[in-house]
Image 1 (tube, rainbow, N blue to C red):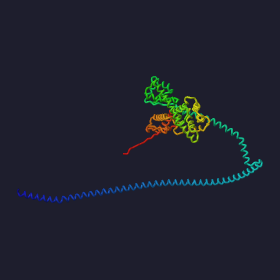
Image 2: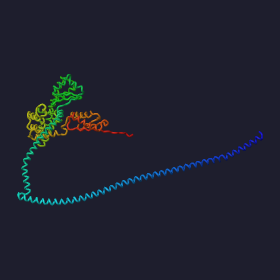
Image 3: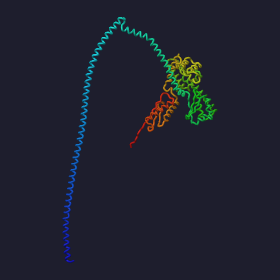
Image 4: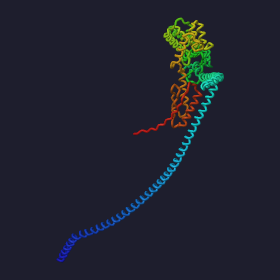
Length: 519
């Protein structure tokens, strides 16, 4: 390499070094200066924005102040208007009060004037009354002098004459009214008796003339009827009863006024149903067997009653009639038990009175003996009982107890009074006389069946021995108005289709419940 090259390289090296120094010292300086310029610009921009914000805030504050002032002015104006209205109303009220005060003052003055006039008139009336009283006293005095009678004596004389004159008219009037009352009472009594007979005849007749026989299945009805009805004809001819076979499931009804025949028929049918062999020949055998067994039951019942009461020497034939009372009921009370109760009570009362207990018991036991034959002999049970007692040689005390225990004839002996008292006590004992359980159950079932036959009925309950029925309905299907209609419809059906004592209350209950479960 020549020397010139070295020189050039050295110069280049020096120039590069100098340029490096320049760059090292001056480049940061220029960068710092540029950064300062940018910072000043940012600050100036921030100042400008701050000024704008402050100006806007001031404008907003002024606007809010103006609006608040306007709202306050508006409210003040409204309050002033309300105050003005109230002041106007107060002024009107004050005027009204002033007018009322004036009117009251006027009325008060008028009342004072009227009061003064009334006081003046009262004084005048009192003065006139004193004058009239003086004149009346003078007139009465003159009359007393003329008639030579005092005022009290004259009044008594007038009353006496009036009483004498009207006594016949009063008596005739009272007699007429008594006759009218007696006639109306008899007519009213006949009407009530006819109504009672019409209303309760069916129930009493059913209770006293009907029995039922339960069957294991409805198939047994066909076997009892038999081919072409020969079995049922044979039964009715031999038993002397009517057999009713209807749609009632598994039941045959036995109808007859004679309780003995009805009992024989019931026992015979029960025996034939258990035996299963139902044909005319077998029916004759069973009926004869049951009659023989029932005769033994009747004889035994009569003897047991006499033995239980300690009564000797009663005719055996008469005891049979006592035993027949076991199958006789009156208003649901068994005649056999009733007679024993009456006899026991008569004996207790006779012992307290120091009388013959056996005679008292005898009168009580036989007082209803006519009911054992009233279905086969003519006359009331009293007349039949008297004939039976005379036929079998009963003493006069017993005969009089039979014929007088219902007041048909006069009571002659104290034993009759004991029988009357004991008969009343036995019949009035709670639970002694009631409808038969069978009729009661049927009526309850019929009542519930009628209620359940209507749409929307969920369930029903017969309560208080059938005197009230409560019907539960579905609230979605039966509304409040429909519930009233349902109660009325049920009432009409019960009145038309059922026979019942007293009244039946129908309550339709509609209950709606909304339920939720919190989890």
